[in-house]
Length: 600
Image (cartoon, rainbow, N blue to C red; front, side):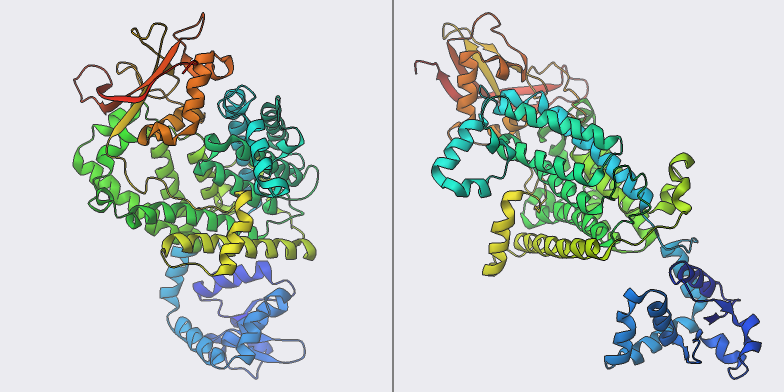
């Protein structure tokens, strides 16, 4: 391959091609022109030339496509299109002449989009950090659930898993195993939920140690799917679906072997990287799209954030301070949020530099959400997905050399069978994800019957999901206070760990911990007790004084024996203003649920 050695644009792209096209010598025409007297120096200056051993000479776009096909046989498609599809040769040669005639401009554009590093991107260090981060998030998720599992879905919990599976089998028969795929079918009762969570903690620690990533990721996905199924209402959140989807895609990304380290023998499959970016795109873009599609005037007039901080499910102390910001800043914040959710996601599909911009925007956005609200591991998982936008050349600037120095070694190719299987699975998952996204964007236009059938078949595995929080902004904050009484006249309140209660108590930071009952109490307050079946089960558990359920709360006002009556009072909460006493103001709205007892 003979090129113009005085052209900076040419040198950048030749250096990039050299990394991937073994067996081709790249020589500047300033040195090689004398070797080929049949080609003028002017012709060499205008276009690259490929001289093959049999004497065949090609130039321009044709030379580029032939070089790609010779260096990497898997890249023969461009050359085939050039040779067989009418119009491709003429259009690509015209494009080549356009670029060649404006090299200075395209050189600047190249540096803007790709940077000064001409190396093709690799993702060994990216994958290593991604799997470590995912192992940590699995550990957080399972640990968080381990201490709550008995009270939520144990035999004496609010929604016992054994009762749920027994009722499902009675109604669906053998089809229940398909509709509710969970390992709990092996032993529905007893300590099964706790055991599943404990196994998840164990596998997460082993994965964090760097052992057998592919089988361990498969095991973690199966375990989390199992507890998500039996967790019912308490594990029905979007971040549970996102963890399942990310965890499944990580299986396709993981290297083989018992101790693969950076996995230099198993380069990351580009198809799996694509699908992880596709998941990140759907997560961010749909979060913005659903807000506009809902028609909520607060999103359209950019005033939603003036109420968001006090009406979000579990605010903490910094949420109070964010609520005090002037309305202009709240409006500007809303504009920036829409830019990050609707425009920035398209940078995911661009070269290195725009992807770095997208990562920076997503990282800042998710960090601000963490600073102003309690969303468990959700934002950590979104940050981890954004990491896929960075390649090894970027990460080596911040990762210690003891982790990244081996990246100079050459990796083997992925075995063809494995590559083919990954590609087929990725194509299927992409198609289903596209159908789900289209169904939400294009409603009420119905999907074809085959598409609906595909969605119905994949639905039980909860691995391809729709995303988008706060489609409609909650304008007020209703809160439920559960109270107990021995005589029906004097009432004492139960205190939750993170849900607002006493107006003078500072809202707590939950960090990565996910308090499932506290979250569901927020949803329950937005509706009706009669349409929240688990709430009656919670009342019964309090009347019976079940210790498994009481451990989910911060304070039990009846430590000696349970109350005779339980009721639920509804309040409307508002953040106080700067200078006012306490953190909240509240007004009573009446009863959410009337007094009940075990005899009634």
